[in-house]
Amino acid sequence: MSSRFVAACVQNNATPDVTHNIETSLRLAQQAVEAGADLICTPEYFSGLRTEDGLFHPAAFEESAHPVLPAFAAAARDWNVWFLLGSLGVLNPDGRISNRSYVINSDGEVVARYNKVHMFDVVLDSGPLTESATIAPGDRSVVVPTPWGGLGLSICYDLRFAPLYRQLAHSGASMLAAPAAFTRVTGEAHWHVLNRARAIEHACYMISPCQYGEVEGGGACFGHSLIVDPWGKVLADGGDSEGVVVADVDMAAVTEARQKIPVLDHDRPIAPGTP
Image 1 (cartoon, rainbow, N blue to C red):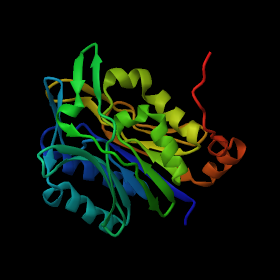
Image 2: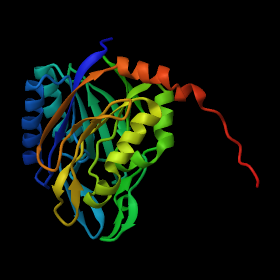
Image 3: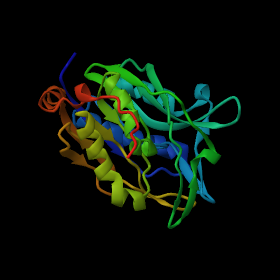
């Protein structure tokens, strides 16, 4: 297992045009390859997204017919890289859609899937957003072995639920991924704080690609794709425009942080108390 590698986040602004989004994301991914990336991560719904009346409408296909998967499998083989496809809309047999991450290895094989667990059902100043009206939640956590260590998977709103990340860390994750389409309003207030907190709490790297820009139908994404080290230092920030961010990752930093402050070893059950 190698302790050092280069991580990259692609930052795009998805439209409902799937072909255009695939082409844009692959172009940006190639830039990451040219910068030396070994693991390339894309945002939530990077292949297509629109909203309507507070509902999310991602570009969705049955997994066997999804145009993104063969395109990125071929790219993984050609470039000898791993991909975390932040999420795709996947049609289920019951007609509902899963918000699903895929990890593809350098042989072009899908080695992990994760369905977003926590649904973004909120009421912001701009109005309600009800993800659960169109998206089916998942119910399982996923840690995928990689050449560099365990990668714990999550998506966007999951970032607000620290117990998920505790479970991932205790299940072997030394890196945590939170691909997102974080709203501009919540991102300005919470995105950096949450990513740094999750990294610090679990002495893990955080790799969090996020869409930027206006969403067709209403709303806007924050951008600022992040790579954060286990001490909470922001190594890369994508700002608010299209591009790629890369950072050198040294897994020895995880070991060092966990030796200095062994929070995972100090977890204890806590019973509810009375005044």
